[in-house]
Image (cartoon, rainbow, N blue to C red; front, side, top):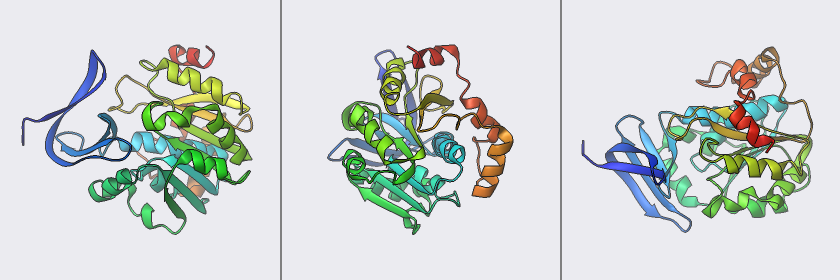
Length: 287
């Protein structure tokens, strides 16, 4: 063991740090700085531009909630578009659903995929080689602009925050195209930051999404290494009523999809309760 530490400084006076057991990779891609290392407590960790993206210890929280909530709310999703998520964890969980016949993942940075497959193989598992998966190294903005109308049932946007390479995934044009390429019962989910520190991110994206979707809200997941409390995931549905599902119906859908009993964070009750927001978060949706 070394005395080396990695510091993630999100604000001048607030952050977190990890003790590094072994540095595995550090590179500058065409888009961002990427670092992967073995940590003492959280297994392997990937940072992009100095910000924690995933750890082996708690990745299941975020991955399960960003995938299972929209797919089970939809109930019959067969075609899923994933923007970002280069570590492969979202793709793996999408493909756990028996209803899914096609999953397209568009990640702009091929180095993230390469390093994840080499150093974080358990995150994506066998998803990379699943015949239902189509992995594209390319621009998600370009893909959604060219996608045919009503060609997907669910869109999952697992992006970085709206700065740098992720900024274009939070625009009116992007959300308009997502609405267009979704079926009439389609659902879009995107990460909206940690509202205790990034309230403007949830507020602004909710206003933008509200221009193109009938039902706009957010739900929460507690990811230990995403500093600042609850992580919010933005909910946008073409039709109203899809998020107000009873746990019994969600349990039946999860069993039929083949994911019941495979999760460590998601449950039917957790999905139903995740939309019950503390006032300080709910206020950002109506600001």
